[in-house]
Length: 123
Image (spheres, rainbow, N blue to C red):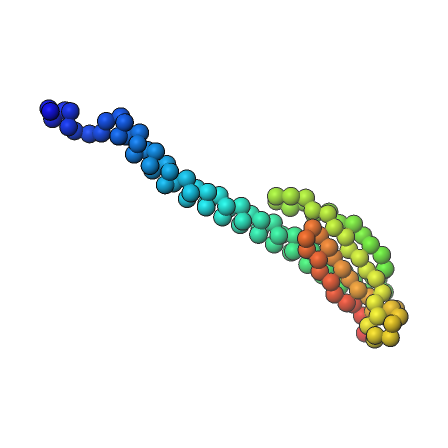
């Protein structure tokens, strides 16, 4: 065998080496893809939660007499998806006597899978 025949890789050896490397990298790329998708989902959920908290804070900042009982529709356009939801305000039985109290209201903000609820009183 001459030196030219012994040096370097043959085409078959190069293709086999490339196939082995590709086979080793494929699972790594799948893991990276899944990680990015999970991070994106967590980011979207965080955005919706922050928006719902903002809506809740707006309602809580109102004077008690300015909070009327009822339901309002919400729409939130996130970075990855558009979400719809509701803000519901209802009278609530704060003293436990079985009848809703006029000076106690339940505030519920629901957007996508996120639901926040709190009570607001006039005192």
